[in-house]
Length: 314
Image 1 (cartoon, rainbow, N blue to C red):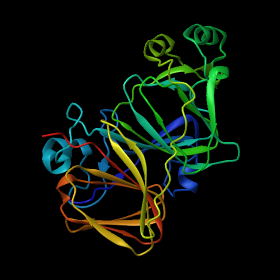
Image 2: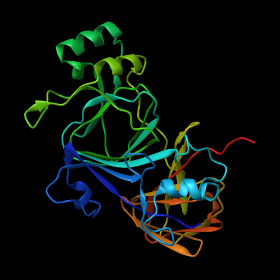
Image 3: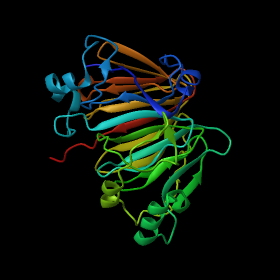
Image 4: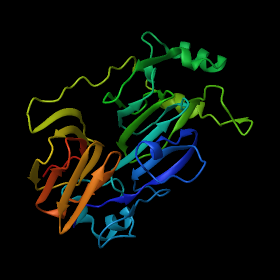
């Protein structure tokens, strides 16, 4: 096994833009507003395709079926699927207000225009009755808690947590492998002259009214001069930390679960199993659990994420 890179899958969205191309150099289809780049996905609707090495052209799901133990090691799958879904979002206009019934996710902001903000949770004191009235009046936005954000800000969105992302924000979205979305409010937007469908009944059944005014993740980088780190998230779903590795420095790892590397800024090389991948801003790779001794090296001073599913307890 060796470090795997995948062809991104681009999704047109009414709220999308073109910054995935201008900021990250991704070859977008022309003239389409692209809101999502699915970087690592083992979903029925989107199965990531390997772009390098002996498995080039195979899907991540094919690897799960034919090389499960080498890929997953001691990590658990989700109904035979890889347990983590990774996207990059480019929000040109506010996305719909929505909720996921069964998914934990984390956002790491990578770019914002002036005034960029995210909407996470309800304002303090919001009751179900108040929220239902706002839904009926088409005024849900007035009850949302907003957070001004800048690059490197991060936040957790639990299952049932109401959320939206404001215009001018780009972020990495790391989440459990589920894409069930219930749209509550769409800012009175029209698509080809018509409003997009809402899923109010389904959303209200799973909405967590106690998710009110959540704070951004407050962790800071450690003071190590060569490799510093900051804790982002540790949950039964997955673990996510952010690292800064100084230019030309390297280290070695041996992993027992798969690890996803995602470069926020800089250049990172990952070498294992006779294969080297070089990652730049906005690029990800998946290091299988069975890759063996792996070298991680920074070409420039580099900031990157390491995401991994939890190991099963013996």
